Length: 90
Image (cartoon, rainbow, N blue to C red):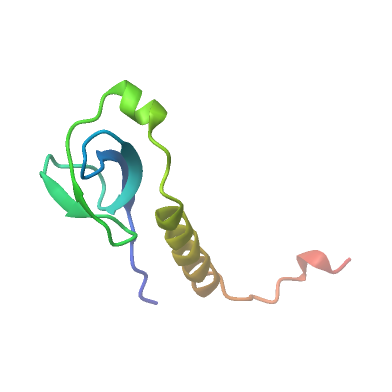
């Protein structure tokens, strides 16, 4: 069975104005210092090292969250076929 490993990490990134930050998900294990990338929800983002305050104040992107939940739900049901286990039969 082929399984696709879908790793992601979260990172607060500045808006185009630079005054607001939002926490987006990105593909990969961790941020490697690149200056820009596209988030899971498809938004191009400028990336910079966030402060602790940025992590605390930046709201999480609901679109990234929903897409990751959908991916996980689809992967989980495909990876866990019904085995006919009699555990529920007593």
